[in-house]
Image 1 (cartoon, rainbow, N blue to C red):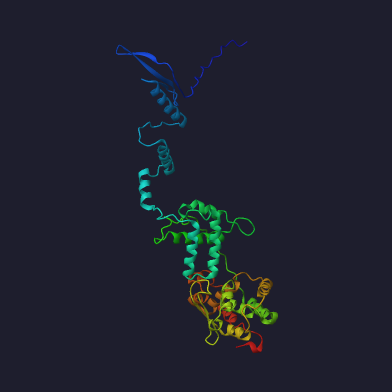
Image 2 (image 1 turned 180 degrees about the horizontal axis):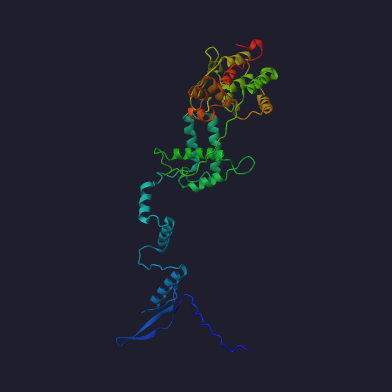
Length: 408
């Protein structure tokens, strides 16, 4: 039997929880031989230290106890100061310091705000602002098709905020929320291209509203919204053999009724979406399509951009146009164009891409290709260099009609 006495461990003192007490009745004490009454606040602080503090009145003791208890809950001391601010203003100041995060002082933030913020000169509702903006764009000569697109985009924006919304009250957060709510054709989130296009239209609108002549908004709420960078891969372009096969098929398709449409898109770089339709409807088509001088004029009311461009009609294009003198867009052309595009798997801008790549390959001039096609030299250099060699370029510009009477 083990008779060794086990050594008892010393009890670990339990740490008292932070707390404060206040007696409702005063206590008696003596100071310099004279009796006096006081109210005692006592207890334990967050660090475990004992707290004992005397007050001449119950109200003073209660106020101090309340402040200290809040400090205990927050884990830090609170400053008890005398201020002329009301409680709501004190809360706003505390919230301002919290948002600043200690990086800058409140006075510096206020100075920056007063320097850069400008109140709108007068409040304007969204509906009349939109109407005036569209009217201004019409006076500037923006094409009707572009006006319709802009109007549709701004109408949707108005529907989200309401026609009676005050223009200067629309925030960056509100516009960004609207953009995030855009939906594509399949019901999912809109593409980045749709985001960028809508953002650009709204930015243009608010920039116009904030012009000094109007001053309806102090700042453009769209400026701070991200614009996505959309990487573009290698552009799709037809080879000489594919171009020849396409034009031979179009030449025999329903008597060659679509030859003018496809030859202008392929050998003149006219944009199939919009430009060819406006060119076909032009009242002075004979003047614009000048076969005698070998020039095609794309005027601002036809072009995607508000500039005039001059496209050289080369011998093979002249042969196609003279050999097939029908309309650019004959009756019921939509179904036929769709059928041809589907047969050859033609992408949206593949004909225009082919024009640029073969132009640069054959004539070795980025500037001339940019002027005729209505693009910048930077875009031509970025996307169309080295897609075809010189021999392919020369062969491409010899693709002519097979009918003997069609040649120039």
